[in-house]
Amino acid sequence: MNAPFPRHDLTGLEMEDSRFTVPGMRCAGCIAKIERGLNELDGVESARVNFSTKRVAVRHQHILSQADLVRVMEGIGFEAQPAAENPMALDDLETKALYRAVAVAGFGMMNIMLLSISIWSGAGGVTRDLFHWLSALIAIPVVAYAGRPFFSSALMALRHRRTNMDVPISIGVLLATGLSAYETLVGGQHAYFDGAVMLLFFLLTGRALDTAMRNRTRAGIGALLSRMGRSATVLRPNAASMTVAAEDLEPGMVMLVSPGEALAADGILLEGCTTFDNSMLTGESLPVSSGAGEKAYAGAINLGHAVKVRVTAAASRTVLAEIARLMDEAGHSRSGYVRIADRASQLYAPVVHSLALLAFAGWMVSGAGWYQSLVIAIAVLIITCPCAMGLAVPAAQVVASGALAKQGLLVKDGSALERLAEADMVHGLTITSSPGSNPIAPNATMRPDVHELTQTECLILKY
Image (cartoon, rainbow, N blue to C red; front, side, top):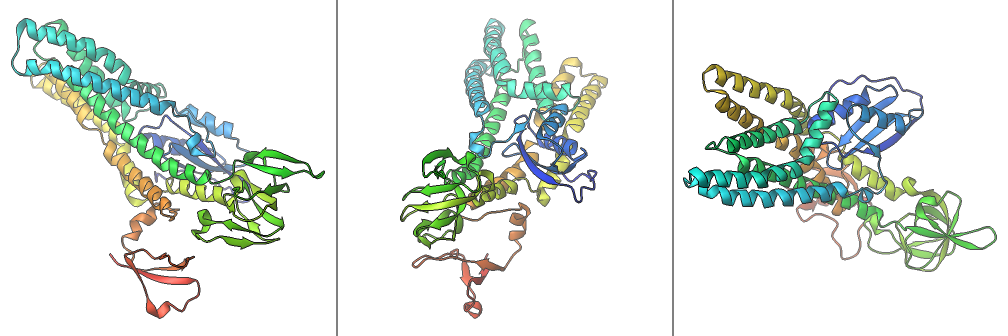
């Protein structure tokens, strides 16, 4: 969203970053409304939405509390709550409900299609009416249950005097079901229960695939954070020890790190000498020797002797947590193609509603009758969803960032993925390699004239 939001002069004020989960986001229009509402708030420097993880990152003045930001989002129609540090800790009730809706819609679609075959083959009279009634008995409960994700989102949007992509979808499905019920009651020739339920099934399947993609993206961040120790043995001044959860550790505490244990916080070795596996930070597979006074990082595994480590940073302030934040921020960035898709998607709801109304009025004026005019208006509402345009581009960006993260490459700005296609040289890379390993990608070659550089290598990437 690149609308010219008003910017406030926050120079010299103490700023902080907050993150929120907003499960009610459904489309690019939702993203625009959230970002616009937050950016217009006094004390907010910037607000960015990551649709794939359904998170909002807000940089704001310190005196502006998270509760204030939550109230603003609720005021524009979105329930929000502070995000958990580990994105895998998010409640999966919505995901399970979505999968159940897909199963119900699939069951209803297949059975209604079986009944529709006879009607399509020319069955009429009592047989046609009977199959219409059987289809209605299946379709109406299926639409009422499987359509809830769309209906609840559309209702919430309308309550707050806004629209989203679920509004025309809900109107189209409900009108198709209602028109089919009317045709069944009066013994008409045509009913569209199969089309309404099939539409729900495919829309829900697409939403389920999108949810699965977002879960895989979050899994990459969660897997990184899982490398951090969940608790630590803390030594008290009286030499007694106690187990403290990682989130309760504070700078100045002294941890006793046993062999094979992963550090729960960043710190400095007080005494002893050991070796650490720092591969999650540096990519270096060989153990690194560390002695008194040297730094140790959360997630590093002690491969040597038991050592004492004084905590310097814990929980969200560790280097490992900062890397996870960079991975998350890659999904908040806006590339050029994302901005184009966002601007186009904002026009969707008003344009589609206007087209459907014009189609209905035009066919009525031409003498087609209310029934035919309504069928055409419903078709306009159903076939014009731009979800692929508004959501596919940011989804591809986030999935690519997650895939690169699994290969050890962190993407801080999504626009870099677009610019990479135009690059023919990458330089200034600091490379850590082990004997027998090849840190250079198979499709890259080393320039022999710069091979004498110590740690900085220049690569020519061949495409």
